[in-house]
Image 1: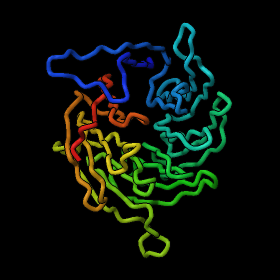
Image 2 (image 1 turned 180 degrees about the horizontal axis):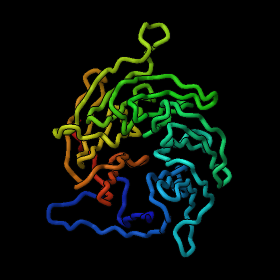
Image 3 (image 1 turned 60 degrees about the horizontal axis):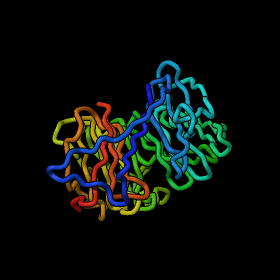
Image 4 (image 1 turned 135 degrees about the vertical axis):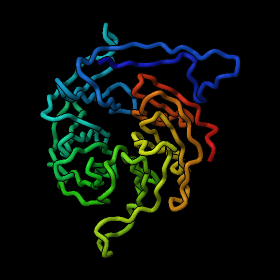
Length: 302
């Protein structure tokens, strides 16, 4: 598999908007072979000069690459072979990266010295089922399992507590409102939201009760494969589904959150959605059909 970098010379702080009669600009691409099937690419720094690759299947591994001015656009800094497939990754504080694996375990790596330095291994937090998605939650990690459990993990002690269990296999998660609210998309096509500020220690409930459930697609069992929140507008959340649908969610009041709009933009499943960290009007969407789209989200109906 290859890693592609797409650039556009006319990029501005306000994303390019297409007029009705204007042709779509063709972006320049450069690529480099990774020699493995890639499940995730993650920028580790704000400068976008360093990335972590998760390779699955034959030759499964973790790779740390850095932008280079040589013949290849990247140089390989470090490679770590894996016993099981890595499914997802997220950045943490202090140049750390958390990896979630197909056996439900987690690992923490430090990339500060331009290498993958193993800091901790946390045994399976999903009773042996896969950790399908991970995201940062303060100084800890939220891990979503294929068995329908959502676990809050303390990476210092390795201990975890269940946020929720009994849901269909979770495919995607994100946090918003400063990490106080978590949203999870599952294989049944539902998005469920919880308020992490609720105290289960003083309650008879062992897990949190969901605040809201949303269904972004009209197609039955259209799995929610991607979720992200806006870097500046905490109430704006984007989702993507296995049928190629992208939706926008207004979560201003989490109990009355609603899907404001949906768009069918790809022929196959959405693999990732993300708002640009410094230019939030740009929504980036990648699909399993090989497409990478930049959408102007400045006029998102909210």
